[in-house]
Length: 224
Image 1: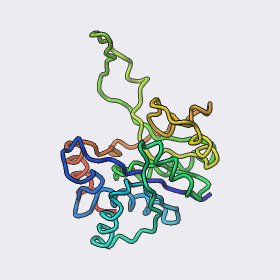
Image 2: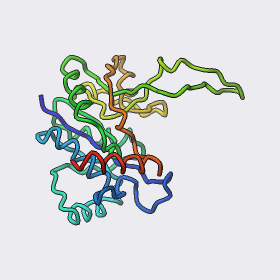
Image 3: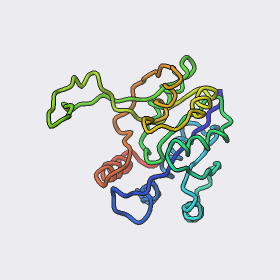
Image 4: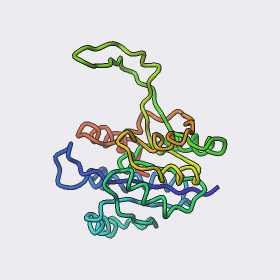
């Protein structure tokens, strides 16, 4: 079984009020995106790697690779208008029997989570990592709110892993605003999604607070 990792990095960092996309922010002297890619590479150095980026940041990324001696072999694909379109483009270059799609700003996915995903994809066509919600939650509508049983809710993470033929078919569907992730696209084909336990540290770095947490965790866990 061969694997393709598609890493998508189209964020612009608007929530952090910074001049460069968040995936290029340095943590421990290295851009977040490099931490993410090296984490996946350390898990499976034989995998194919595809990276989607906005075309206007290609040169910046290439300069970073030179600056930090980053020599991981990968295919660089121009991102689309929406994340959906970026993945749609990237899938055309995928060679693996299994395609794992991961956010470029999730550098803290654990080997245990990755191992669980890869073991389950042998039996299931679509597998995603999820994590329990610890806090109480409420549904708000029409100026009213009501409590929801948090045991029926899960936090969805990446990478989301699929059989190649399935995800190829899914991304032939016309884009819809209802698509929140790759699993929601696949579900349009009537396919059930297998949920596996993710790891709490596997946060998506979106805000300044997320950045502080990731910096602390990467500093204490060591570099990949």
